Length: 413
Image (cartoon, rainbow, N blue to C red):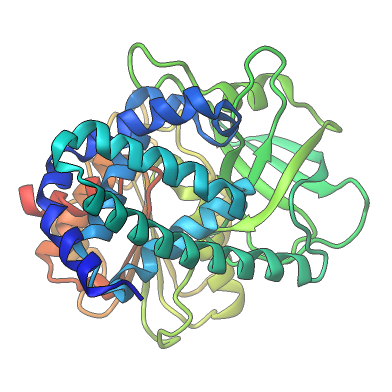
């Protein structure tokens, strides 16, 4: 527990920290990478270059300070962080490095406002959060190791199949090189791929598992990514996977992680709506296939939004799912259809996901909503669900960026 004095000080400095949070995180990363370059291996440099990682950390710091007297409100955020850390192999000895440079960054940015008393309070608050995260991460590591076929760290997997799903998406079917069992996972989770790139050392990457568990393989479906911004590097690992990795090659894989999973405490009769934008289909596809297999009477609505038929992945697979799942309803929307897409009925509609579509096509008064995709898509979906008065307890999403970018969309929409 934090002391009353620490809570008071943290709450007093929260407005100042919030106003300067992104400056603090930029200084933090710069200092940490200069003084402890070994930790750069855990960070995606494209996200550093775009500023997304700095913004995400700034949001996390502001959320922690805001809820410093009600830490239970941070449980979902702690779980997200812990799962991400375990996917990268973060260990307790990394936390003092972060704490040291975070305090130094706050002192540099806040100047005279960062008194010894303030820094002591922030240090105490940081250590409490670190202890909570370390404790949860140790639980996750232990569960991974104890699972049938489970492991910690990285394990060799062989590319058993490589299949093109669209002009920009390729699936990789991965089987363990040792021929031993692999653990099941919760649909929606991801695995980590670590590649020693031949020219540019880079961090491991997380890819959602795009098939239902229990198949004897892990399937990831990777979009060949361009640069996040005009002056940023392209998708180094996604391009490497597409262009260099072939059948029979070996990849280093971390065990399944992630908290974006089907809620286990909801009635099996409650409808599930899965809304996918582009490559965001991957975790939702695993969810849909699992629901059809394990709860065939549960109503499932699966919507795919794509540019056009050239980028639309899994069209045949989803059609087959609809044949197998009597309670599955599907819809495809293109926002930049090619010539013939509409005439040949490759999509059901054109445009974007809208409040009116969700109102007319989905049982919004009762359904659980899961969505994943690009930021603009997710902001639009979140805003539409808020307008329909869908409670946050029925809204679940996966976003590889600052969470506040999505949740703030309703306020400005």
